[in-house]
Image (cartoon, rainbow, N blue to C red; front, side):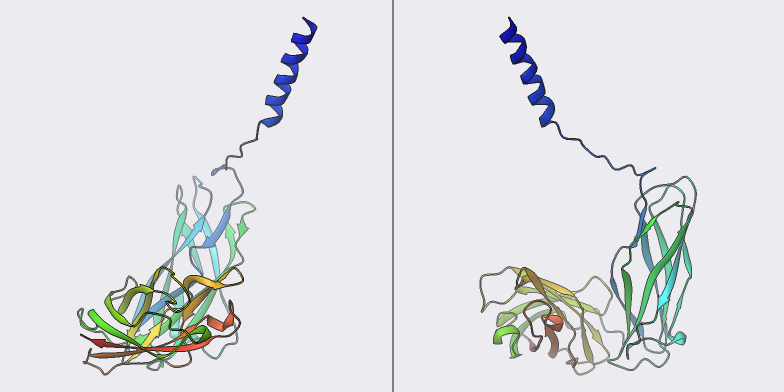
Length: 281
């Protein structure tokens, strides 16, 4: 009988020691975290006009009363920094009661922005009221503003022959030579995108969406486009280079796109300034 009792006790202890404590986040009384929902945003502005955008700011908890998030403009000292007359931004945004999201109003203004030029505004969250000791994400949001000339909805849409005129990292082609299909991108009427395999010379890697915007005869390539391939465990990204490529206004037969492969050499050690030409079929 004694042996039986000891066995039962040991079995009970074994089951107890294997139990794991499950932590369930309390979205009402838990620690609140507030942040932008993205770190970068492109804002095309029609020539001699302005453009509005509402920027989501998110908090991780819910409340039965309004909360106010304060936002500040950060000076980076960069040459591309926008001047005060090129934007308007609200200093705060209200997250309504029983909501996780508030929308910050921002207006970009074409006050001296040149064709092919990009002006940036960097925002940070500086405080929140009505949320106790909320934890503020230290990340910033950079808004890139550039001038656009409206294009027809079928302009640079359809099948194009892709050819490489300047290679990417390690002297390799960034996209295969062949036919790609250009469609309208998600960010604006002037945005375009095609899907193609990445780095065909370096391996059998999957395709990515390559996003760019038609800007008054030039091409602005979206920054931070992740390839999923890289060196040392980090992915390369594709973005704008020091030249913009271009096209002839009103003519969608040929498009030249210049872009940076491995932006800043962040993954493989050296940025490559690549270029492709797309010719309408």
